[in-house]
Length: 117
Image (spheres, rainbow, N blue to C red):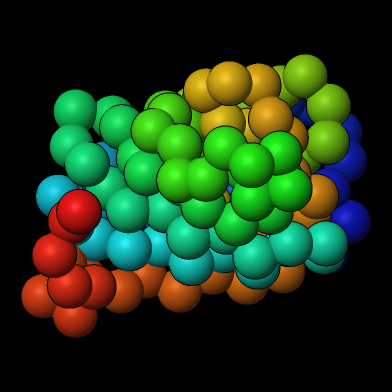
């Protein structure tokens, strides 16, 4: 899918791709995100916070790190703040780290994700 055009066009395009909204994530849910260059594991801590490991966080020796998710972008400055992940989009964390393009993501509900440590 080629994503282009105005913000209104992009907003309608996001309805046509596979996404997961931050509001759909419950305490303890685990979101595994594969980007073009990395693999991230996010555990929902509630109140908008996530424990993140993998990718940039591991390379910088900061994993696991507690941070927020700003949302997903199409590669520019326009951000969809409600999204935690979207196929073909870029994930921006609260510390301004921007991933490479998301290839896939898997939600592991809290009972299967194990306990939060």
